Image 1 (cartoon, helix red, strand yellow):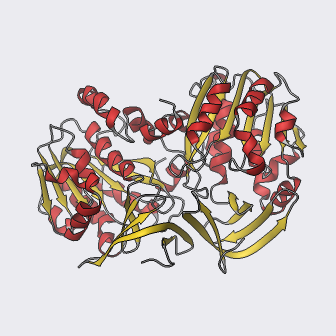
Image 2: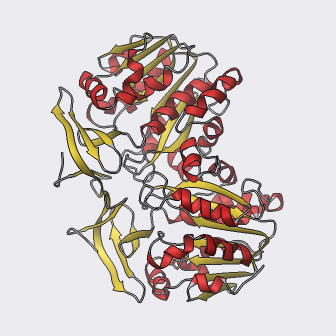
Image 3: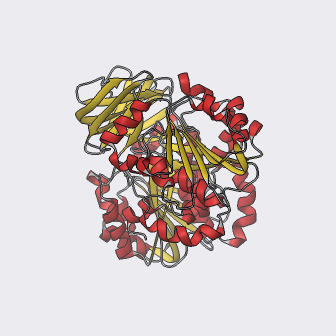
Length: 286
Length: 286
């Protein structure tokens, strides 16, 4: 995976941009049934997990991604009990969801069990929630698994890699429509939806697919320092619930919790939905 | 400047991170009195201007930087007449300011005239405002120049490179205090203040210096795809004016103008001031 001595680097946007990190130590490298998994100790971002040569999680900024999707969805749903996370084997999303005592069930559907095991070893801060008794780890294909549910989950999070190979199916109209069916009437889906500047996967089409399946499609933006292009978008989809409307009953709880969070606060929650012209136009959300 | 055949790359954060762009053609390279100036035609970001091997302006995203500082300052000042830009030889900020018919004087103090000439040749879209009769180009050292003014400018923009070499003086307490003196009572200063994740220049100290000189110090965040770390901060400083409070008299004007802008809109203006916990803590703006 390392193209040069002591550097991990990733090429993106049709291989025309390169981003690399100086590596102090290769902590782990393996080829699982599904992908190449590596962990590097870097100078700039601390420990860095990569899958098939793509940056996934780092000590530097994992909290941005995980707090954004877990707390925006939990703070808008009126009364979430059941959560499903597809992907997310690093455990970071679970760690945030277990902070809500009102949740009863958190299912983590990760196709590659090795990602969970490697994360437990090198990112114990991320995986700390996996031992919570409400958490169920399901090592299977999320696309097939979700088809078994109807009107069941309150929150579904798609924590996927890029729309390529086995993750490509997680960005289709058919999949989104299966997700919609698996959600309860107040259900919320959030998903990572790539960078709009280096637009290799046509973000406009991703949002067209979302709009074909969900009544309400909004987006939030947040920076993921280790991802290609950094400026990241996340879809917020529901059968009607507005992502900007915080659940007022949960505000006292979050007023306290947000003091200990590294990224999320309720003012930022609302601001993250306000898009600049460029992003609105690229996503077709004008 | 090109480390490999057909790639421009920049190392940052103590040279532990690398970011590179595939180059289709080297359009220009020279060593001016002040710095190395280069323009590349790249695959990912279009034309790219670099100074001393650092990315400055690209076709892909120049509008983010220029619209952010020009419109946030112009839309909060009650009645700006005189603007000073320090740096900014690419002309992008001037292009945005000349859109306000009420401005009477726009001074561009660029130490390196060659940056202006090279920009005119390769970034005519950025330099289009320089021919406006209200624009005065002053080819001198901004630090010395600004010391000649007292209670004169309504808006001052610091469009500088990183706090290194001849730009280092643009981040000191002494300089900010000179800027404050040159501003009128409703005056606003905006300045680029680097990335808080790869914090090579100690962003906390920059904001301490700002707070030592200005009564009101706020910050906005926006992504600059070609800058190290992308997630960028900009200081908004004043003698009291709140950056979130839009000037209501100018709202009808902007309602019309923002349709043609690529990044800025008034809702985003207000949202850009709402910082996540990480950024507030790094900047000391809690």
